[in-house]
Length: 196
Image (cartoon, rainbow, N blue to C red; front, side):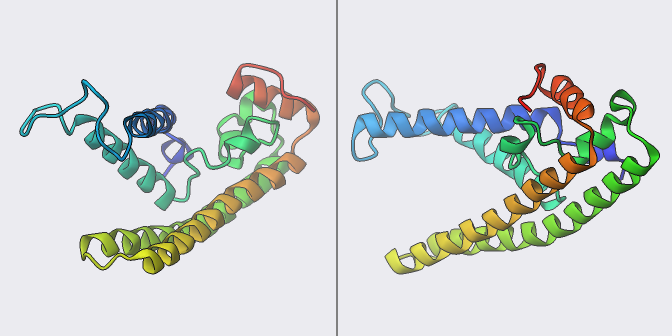
């Protein structure tokens, strides 16, 4: 698989933003309506064709994000680093020519990228298994406060571990690049100059 095909698909970034906005809107509507009932004027008659559309889109986005994570990529988990002057190894490799990356830097970057993928894939597998266990509690009608709390804790620990792999890779990548390369990277990726 090429680096380009492993890259975070442009649609994923849009999907992440859409999910965040969609979940915020759903949460806001539910909060405003009280006790989870639809707000006034927002109802879905039984069998309405569009009643499940937003939920299905979010479900599809989530499946796409899960696939990206399973492949070892970050799906936005390291945006805090990337947006603030800590480049990621994959995107540095994609911008090798534009950044003027030396052969030694490229070798080190490939090592960082391969290590990140290997570690992230294993941890993403544990995250997927934890998410599946959480879903099963509800699917099998065995959920109670204790089991849900334990399952959510397990899931969030697994998510933390995946995120840490990506954030640590960004930390290490920063040390391989010159300041000029980091600034150029930020300009190319985010359209602005990073703070030093």
